[in-house]
Length: 381
Image (cartoon, rainbow, N blue to C red; front, side, top):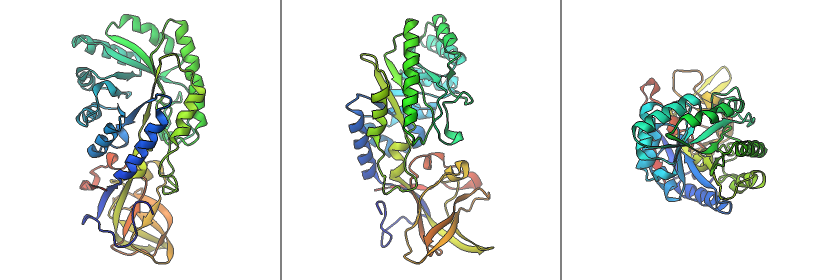
């Protein structure tokens, strides 16, 4: 196993903790930057995946920018050392206070999603004597073929400007003197494993660029979003995503204009495999032919299985016994507090340590205090 040995490894006294393999993070960042370099892609790390400060500082040191979806994330990015001119601020519902904070920091770009938002940006930027640089987030109506809750590029989703409305949005910019249009932005979803959808997105952006150029708009920036998925089923066999194949889709299908900078926003693919949720077994309980392994960790530490029905590879780090099926569950007072059903684990008993893999993205960052739970600690190697 890559992250842990199953015997004799020292661990914190806490019953539950997030374990981060910083060597694997560095390996992932090296592969990412090497794949992005030939095409001169500007990579922005999506803080929503994991905003742990030591991890952010490592990502910033690797030369990535920051993709933020709240004023708090903008502030955290700046605190972690990201340069303001490499920070983008996305999100369908930016508050006035969040916009003012980002304007005062003179961030690189706002990814704007509606005419009302553009009007507010214009008003607040004018009050500060600034110009808000914006990329229009379009909704390209491209199916990402991923979970419905993390699909963002279809017309039924709340994100972005519909293609039918884009002409009116462009026309509205003439009356907004404190807004500067510098690019287009699209993000069609998350945990995408069928890379062909990025070819579909590229072709849609090619059409839009041609249409915009016919209206006199030549944009220096294109932001194609992120969404590259990871392998949750076999993390040890696929610790580092195939970044070369991801960038290759855009190299092959996106018609970049001379001097045009292409931006991507990757989060999960950067940090998911370097993080593991480790928890101690509190009880093993048999009920109506179901054997439960009840962990100290629950949906308060990793909500993805309860929220999306998502799969995480689970291992018993303490036992070498005969394999048996277990429903691995947490202590939270909700029936949905279940990590997986029928998982084959070595015979498990009270006190064993269980690892829930690929938890570096949307694990710690989505933790809650429900049931007045204390936040689990982070441990680094």
